[in-house]
Length: 224
Image (cartoon, rainbow, N blue to C red):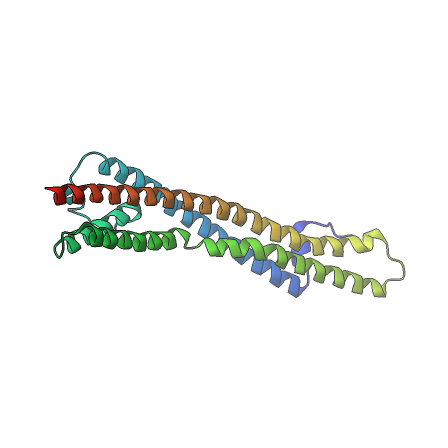
């Protein structure tokens, strides 16, 4: 009797079950690529946020803070504040009234925040899809395998556990593989969503602080 090992079950499985295993393998590879790519994005985002926070609150003038800023490379809170500062300078050349200036600045920062949200959430939908679909693919393979196992019993006069066990083990293997793919994806998705929301809250706080600074600045100038 052939030993019932993982590789024996893989190579001895039907073509359809092997196809489902390949689909799950591809999903696992995509999942881990997305996990490491998002990990790098969030690691750099946190580092850049801390660096910009130190520079912003160091007392440096805003014009000097953004003097060498490349608008195509800046990200995170720096991008949000830079977008507001650029709009502030543009509108201030046309009017000295605080209301239209602040409205334009806040609108510009809201757009930058939405773009940062899209950047941080990019790739998370793939993890969510893999995490939710993989168990169902595995379950589908299990149901299919059980059906095939029962069909094979039709040609056997006496059904024993030794006859049924290989087919049932092969059928349940796809469910195990589906869970093996889904669990890391779901964990990573939840972790990155929490990290994204935390960073976006920090960015919004920066936007509020910057709006307050500009508001006080405009009120003082108008009073003078």
